[in-house]
Image (cartoon, rainbow, N blue to C red; front, side, top):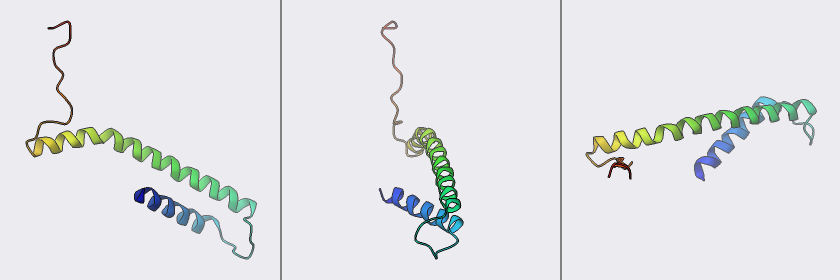
Length: 85
């Protein structure tokens, strides 16, 4: 939860600084609103790609770490199937 909130706060800050240039009005202009929408969407897509890559790398990292410490791997070894017994 903490990491999610840090990412969310950082995204908000980056997009606000990039898109909002006039603080004299209470409401956002149309340009500011569309800029914020595209900025947030771009960062969310990038975050999804990073998380997808991370999820793909975790099993390999866990196996490598288990091998380094001499522990059995986290994934069970495939045994003989029902046809081979």
